[in-house]
Image 1 (cartoon, one colour):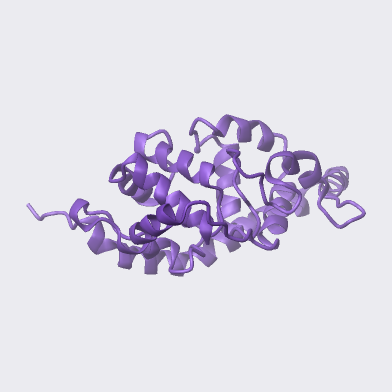
Image 2 (cartoon, helix red, strand yellow; image 1 turned 90 degrees about the horizontal axis):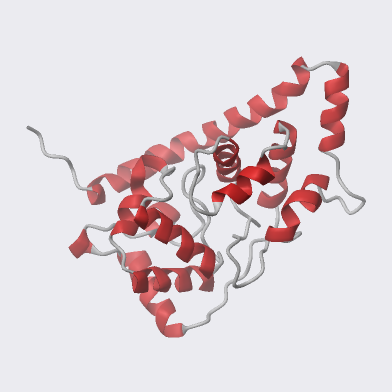
Length: 236
């Protein structure tokens, strides 16, 4: 029987494939959303227009009423909390995650909060949320513990060859900018959120990732290494 190739050897090929298909994913989803009002009745179109409205400051009404309490008006969440920054996140990634929350594909312990938030949103509102947050200025980095940051940097760029764990940069990039729709921007992300998500991947509580890569990677990390990676990511 042919032997399976280790994940370390297929990561570069997988990354190239995702780069080619990522634009198509975002385009297809956007077309699906934007096509909905065309087939709707006149009354339905007027409702969509109302629910996709903006405030006097140009901020989408749905962001002000649904998103800002946890993620901040500009998509930068409060430090120390469990909610992620959304500012500057890739639009295709945001659309994919919102779809996974709406369909309950994403079901980690924090997801039920988002299930309730996304459930009443129209396709137009979901597209508007993704457009708005992806256009915001990303959060700046902050160093809380230089030693942890240094340890996390080694893991990010070097991986753990003795445990067959690829470097994080293979998918998320040298600048932590990510690669949509599967690999999000990480730079400046909240430490607590990163720790929670890596822990969920490690335990199998979060499973909706491309090809199971994050479950595999997180399973190689111990709690201290997870904390170090979170510190480095927050510092960028």
